Image (cartoon, rainbow, N blue to C red; front, side, top):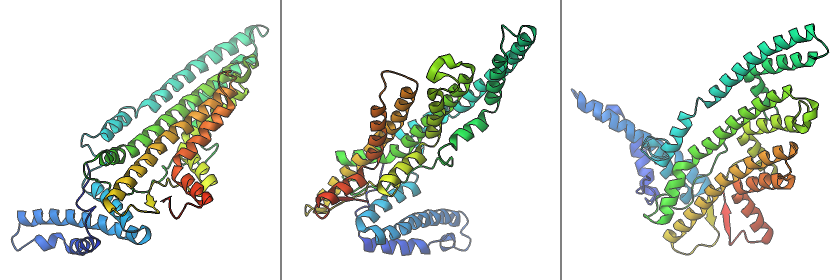
Length: 370
């Protein structure tokens, strides 16, 4: 659900509304002996003040990005101020995704509990192996006991191990990349473009959070698998204790723990910015503002959709590289690299199109993304 009234309002009206709303306060409504009337007035004044503050914050966007950007920012700010949008408990699709996230919040703890139980079992078996080695050294090598002690200790200290893996490639940051506002009319006029904008405006943030949550859980499971491979022998090849597959298991786990930071690194390396640019501005307009708004809204929606697909492809690429390191004949290193760079380019489709248009000399007549 989106607020359409302010999207098409004149800037002069918005300015007056900001000035008026900033002057409202609970005291303005509280007449002598007001009682309930004063309380109601205070609530109304606070609500109007919050909306006014949201619109006032968009005034900066008006100066930096232009009137169209300000209208889109105002629309989004109003949705947030009025309790609309993603994960607000309004029975929207985003709430379904948020319910999934909340319901699965204990899965990492469940994996940790299993690891703790495995560590306890390994500690007991390590003592038994040590006893067998003392009684019969030729049949039970000392390494059998030592490996179980090491693996069991790592399982007991799983939080410390996961922290070390998470800091392996980055500083452990898991901040989400910022996404620019929608271009065109985010409210639309009830058309298909309006519905698509409303859909992705609602589901983008929780869906990206779901992808990151899956990455974290997968990284935790890979860490447990990597610890368990300490019990293997050199005859297991890449999946042995010091095999390339085991090493890459910990490396890929570190990537999955900090998926957003790794994506930001790829984005900054290619386009000098980690911001996902989805705001489109037509170099040559059709002459009809309403038509231009519909076009820009659809373009922005496509870019947001490609951002989601890009993150999935980016994550899949690292899983393919892990399979290559483990000697899986069906996995290809080129396929993994293609998924990684293809996913990074899909997330940064806006900057990529800017670069292509600039190379071809079409910047003045094409579409510029911010």
